[in-house]
Image 1 (cartoon, rainbow, N blue to C red):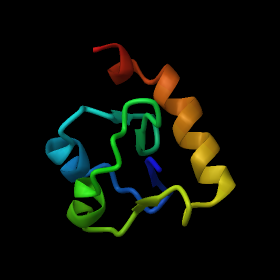
Image 2 (image 1 turned 120 degrees about the vertical axis):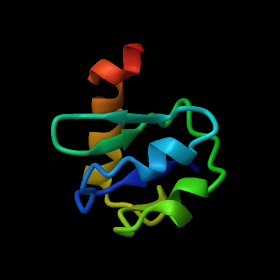
Image 3 (image 1 turned 45 degrees about the vertical axis):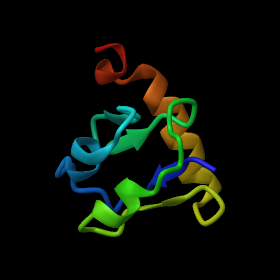
Image 4 (image 1 turned 45 degrees about the horizontal axis):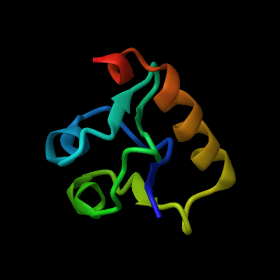
Length: 79
């Protein structure tokens, strides 16, 4: 199960700094997680100071869809 970031994200980047597979991408409003890249290690969940990250079983359908869609179009996804 990939992790998902909700709209409590404040774009601090703590999750991106710890992610071992660079699954985090920054959208206009927040960081998002690419579900195709995430290995569900949970490092980002523990690192997030806003508690804005959870696994997809606990996330809303809206957050899951937003993360998947935005991860594909974020400029950082092409770095």
